[in-house]
Image (tube, rainbow, N blue to C red; front, side, top):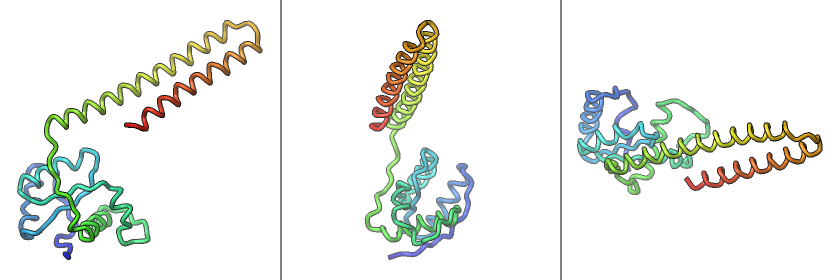
Length: 174
């Protein structure tokens, strides 16, 4: 269905470098597609720049490429090997590739706010657990009977574990 037309090479991650990359891809012809892995937020400027030049861009979840096997039994890990795996995936799935559309500003801001909120909540819960441990230690110091200390300590630990378990359950949904 197609062939790898441009061997892996490096371009600077600057406006000039992205422009050079775009012109190199455009020179390959009209039916050229760029297939890349989603890499957190690092792929966004590249995908958006190429899209602005009218180049068909497809951004894939790295799991798709990993699950496809990439045509090799060995676990070779290098940028060139990864690029060839991504290219092979693109060729094998040429018809089913979905074109990239840049994220609008509102969606970018919502994603950023969501990440900040998650980090904030993680910090709050961790502080709460530390405070709870300190408080429980202070309570245990003031219980005169060793047996009562042990029972109360076990109850406090079960409560802390429950708080942590509930937190872990909530994180599964994010």
